[in-house]
Image (cartoon, rainbow, N blue to C red; front, side, top):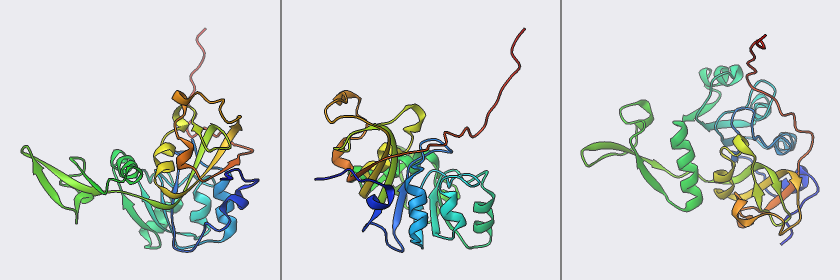
Length: 234
């Protein structure tokens, strides 16, 4: 099976449709699929449900889809520091399903593992539990959460090969491995291509069996979300 594509646009061909659900890796400004998101924007696909930790930052990442009116609903954990997100949500133009961060990660992992539901104590007694079954185990209350899956997962890796095996770098790993396993179709962009067989099998974070299409990523911004410095000691 040919997995290597020449561009983001080619890799997305035949995959996108209005009303679909997309998972997008990334955490803040780190690990975002910076080549695939603009290609999705250019396609004009709309009415999207997007599952991601956050929705980018001003002018970066998923913010581009939000500003272009292509996102109908966000399933997220962190929604701060995005004024457009706030405006759209408060005006009723954007639907939001808010999740505790660990719950979001586990729902995605469960989707990839084929586990339809699980119980967690996180969120019991809060708005997070509204409308969800709550049961007691060993005298403690737990809320039932359901898996998350997507029509398309877009992820970014540090190294990868033409077979779709992926390695992520440090904190840029974040939600990417779990999302790669939970998409009906998974497209990965990689910073550095290596020969098939050159990656140590024990170091591969996402096996190629989870990845359908791969592209070479380019022109990464490598932005720093919050730069904090202190004066050098004399």
